[in-house]
Length: 241
Image (cartoon, rainbow, N blue to C red; front, side, top):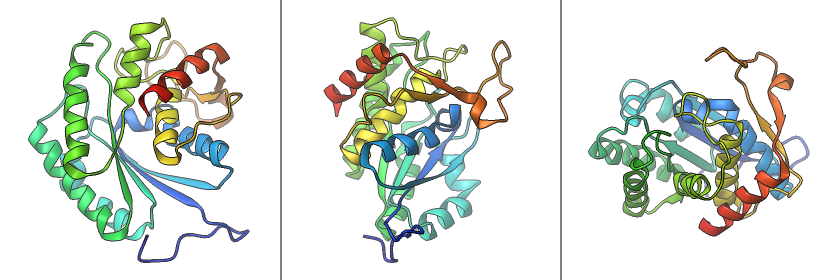
């Protein structure tokens, strides 16, 4: 439990609070907001999400260049969960990942926030890298005695058993469908539940036929995922979690 009382909403109910630390694999397609919506659908309870994510940045950068932002948010944000996402393409030093993830987890432990290691996925043209990612992040979660979100394992299983397109057109970031998968894995790890079978909403914040400009209006990024695709994702998530 936190040392301070949980945040309350206006009707007196407890609100779950989640902090996301990472880079573009976290902020792509407003993934934390999609996770919030899924958690609320799965639990019927209020959830708030907050994000410290910057393009191409590693946990080392977060805990050196942006240390005071990370420290303040973790120690004073009264979060229930902190999702920790390391640089993925390319993977950096494993020693650095262990060192800086440990520092984040130690801050979380001071205030009763539950850390979750975000397991990333390999580049589309380098699927062989997934084996090392899986080993590295499972080892890290075991070493720190924290939860693992096995996103990369679910991702690769779906790629190997279906023709679902999980990648954005750069072959590294997630498509809207890929981020739906990520949000579902996180929802299951955090709540033990899946959203309802008719939760078809996802976000695609990119402008078609242009590489990185994003849509400015939230309503313009809302897309629907085909129910057959969602059923496959649900089945694979349940296999791993």
